[in-house]
Length: 265
Image (cartoon, rainbow, N blue to C red; front, side, top):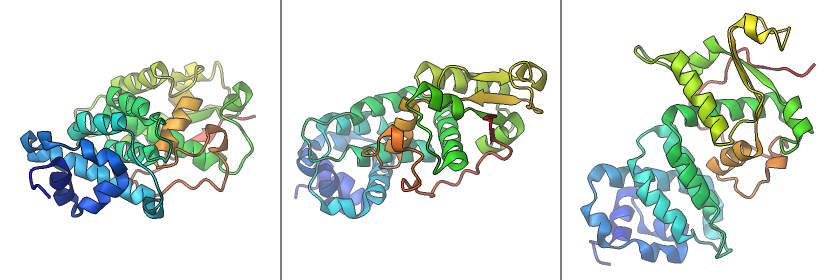
């Protein structure tokens, strides 16, 4: 095998060209000589994403399937500049979810494009919100795909606990970041309308039981879809998100938000 091909370069980076071939299927042929001009950092970033995809796929790697070329293009173009650990796991999960036996199923390219538009803060917040939703409501028969279901899934997040989960450091303005993340997630349809943010006195005008500064949010079907795809569960519908049989891998070192609770009466 030509040592200058993209397949060899990526295969060497993760320790196995066979893994690259198994993940991509025939699409591996698109890995040409262009990668020879990449910096070592870009190669490391993409290899990390492929390692995540390998882990998410597990035994499914032995099943027939391939990744659509458009998804691979997104991983190479967008993922190669991804240095954030959680963001890389999102890219890797979408890559794993995109592996399919259906030739024209290129839905993953839309989510790759979406991830490229999200900041590191927005991706981390998305993870925190949906991991919290799954934790609080797991096993309950509530559909996030319906208006009534989303109302039942309304959650309060205290600012102080959110700041700890975001792991802010000196110099990061949490007030500005909260506004950036929530409005950005809303703009992309990743949380539903009806979210509120502010001091306790303001929030109490809508929800009398709130006793802390913080924000209210409701999940959305696109937000659930991204979360599932990020964990290699692209074959699970948003309506089954809270099914207890849908298990989200617990391999991300971010603490759940303490004090988060349902606003369900």
